[in-house]
Image 1 (cartoon, rainbow over the protein chains, first blue to last red):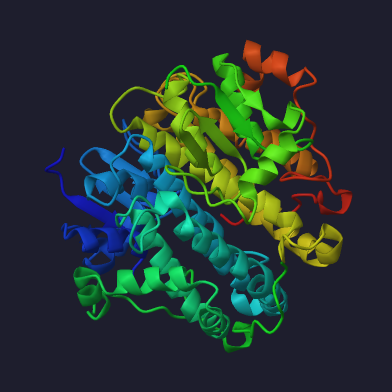
Image 2 (image 1 turned 180 degrees about the vertical axis):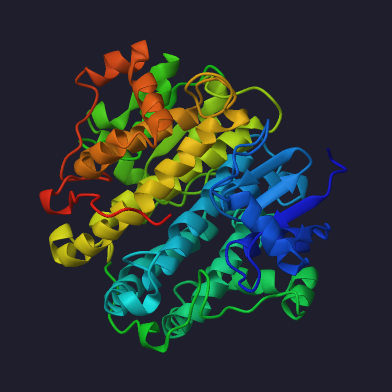
Length: 257
Length: 257
């Protein structure tokens, strides 16, 4: 089982939620296959999420990608895949209970922060185009940048001041874990979507530890090489993080204290 | 550690996300304390989520409740707590890899299905009242009931037809797991929020296995006793699942095939 190859099944073109998983493999220097770059990769993915797929003897069908296949384990849900991989890839602390503490941080970045950014351009329905919900997206984005962005940045800043974060730039236990990589990718996507508000947040010096973590991940040798390569897919008008000029609102109002 | 008491820290009055955790303790017959029913319980909770809390030596501060304290483990995020508890409470299958398969199902019910129901009454901002986003809520609810509700119900119906679900009414491995309890609670909340659409879904017979699972959980002796007791807090105009007459829309349009 330890010898089984890691296979990532995800959309091509967009970095999306799959990118959180890619960064873990990259940082660990562990090879993996990726349908985004394989001939017929999208057919493989559509097979997994087809209405006709009922899974196999051991694995229920996945609801949506990303999906990880590792030997006879086929699992979905980003946070779940990350938690499965983290300890195997050496991206976890080592005390009993640590994986639960790290998973809580990763979930806060993923299912909180990151999903809320996504919902800024799709507040009404993910089945509709952005253009069909522009007005609502603007209203949501203004509120989000004002109230939720400082809440998430402030939370992770607080985590980084806490004793459990240990020495150095990382969120937990003084070591780089999968939660750091998730937060990096979430910040990177938010920089793209809300460039003005993020520039203001950085300038304010209120979240210096958060942006230090961002830079520290970016400077990891394998990550830096990957980010500069063609394997790093670009953010665009598709996917989780999108830049629409009209939604890139200024954080011109002081957040709630 | 096995002897340490389980302490649930959550809002009072609303069942909310904490209820998924309560149902696990109830089904397992394992005692736990619950700030919702303790004098000073809300002060305890506010202490955990205070802007001043930086956690302790081992535990980062939680972002939001529910929070579980078990010995020196203090963790947040509902799906994380459930995955921590599931095997300890005997609510998991037993093959290697099963907890990841079960967690994927629980996450699909929680971070997919359940969160999307919540967002139907708060599409624009969770900092605003429903009354400040009524129009957008109606637009979202109509789409959700038409396109997303059948998608989620259809998905879980498909899981239940799959071989990995095993014999009997349960989602995975022929045994009751925490994912079944999560799906039950999500269905129960959705029944409350979207009573007309759920009645139509039940009547359609397209999702018979899903509703059989719902009834099977409801009929578990400890669950049945709990649901009939005063400990079971009622859904209301607060919390994750809410009933607003104007949002309780008919599923009068055939969903996308």
